[in-house]
Length: 413
Image (cartoon, rainbow, N blue to C red; front, side):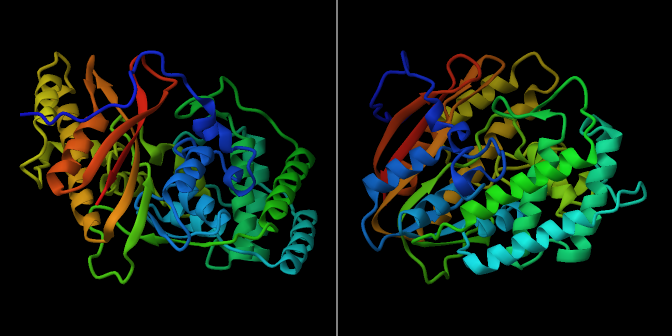
C-alpha cells in the first residue's frame, strides 16, 4: 500500500524560477568561478538557511557537488561539513570555501602576471587524453593552452594542497571552457558547430581577466567554516564526532544525465582523470552514475534493500516492459538509484541530532513516458526509516520535458 505524502502546491502553473537554478550563481563571486550546471541556486540555499538554521547549528550536505551549501553557510556565518565522492569536486569545494590573506593574494597576482609574460608557445607540450579533443578546441587554441599549462606547472606545480596556487588552477579550468566549443545553455552541455581559433594575446588577456576576478572575490572573508570530505554518501561513518542540526542537499537526479561528462574536461586538464575507464569507475560509485562502465555494470547489479516503496517497484516494472532494447537496463538504473538513496538515508540518520531539519532538493524524471516521481519515493523511504514531519514543497518547473519539476522534501529526524 502506497503512503500518501501531502503536497503544498498543485503542479499546474508552477513557474520556471530561473533564480532557483545554476544560472543565478554565475555572477556571484566564488559561486561563479566555474560554470557547472549541477550546482543549485545560491538563493534557494540562502532562503533555507534563513528559515531552518539558528546560531550555532552545524549543517551537513552529503552531496557537496560544487559546495554551494557550504559556501552559502560560510557567508552567513555557519559551520558545515560536506561529503563528496568526486576528488575534483572535493578539491574545488575546499578552494572555494577557504579564507585567503589579502597580502598573499596580491603577491600571487604579481607572480601570476610574471608567469604569463614568460610563456613560450610550442607544439610539443602535454595535452589531456580526451577522446576527440579537436571537437573541444581548435588545434591552435589547444597548442596555446598546453603551453600555458606547462608554464603554470613550472611556476606553481601541479594542483595540490596549496590553496593559493590552486586558485591559478581554478582560473585555468575556467579558461579551458571559455576557449572551448562547449555551450552551457541548458541542464547539461552541448557543442557549438565549429571550434574557435584564438590567438595567444587573446587567451593571455582572457586568462588575466578570469584570474583577476577570482582574486577579487577571494579577498572577501567568510564568516563561517566549511570542509569538504571524501565520503561515499551510501556509507557515511557512524563513528563521527559530529552530529548535525540541519541537512541541506541536492543529490543527483535519476535522469540519465552524467555529471562526470560535464566535469571531464576540468578533471583531465588538472589530472584528476587519466582515462575513460577512470571516469566510468567513478560514475559507478556515485549515486545516479551513467557514464561508460556504470551502465554496463547494471546487468549484474542486485539490490541491497528489499523493502523499498511499492510505487518504485511499480514504475520499474512499467519501464522494463517498454519496447526498447534498453528498457530493462533503464529499469535497473532507476531501481539502483533509489536503492542507493535508501542506503544513504539510513546511514545519515545515525549522524543527526533529534529534531534535525532535513531539506532534499530533488527532481522527478521520465522514462519512455513513465514518470518516476522521485519526491514521493524518497519521501516514502524517509517515512519507512523513521524520518518525521515529511512535506513536499514544489519549487519550480524545470527547463526540460513537460511535467518535470523540482521539489524540496522537508522532514525532521
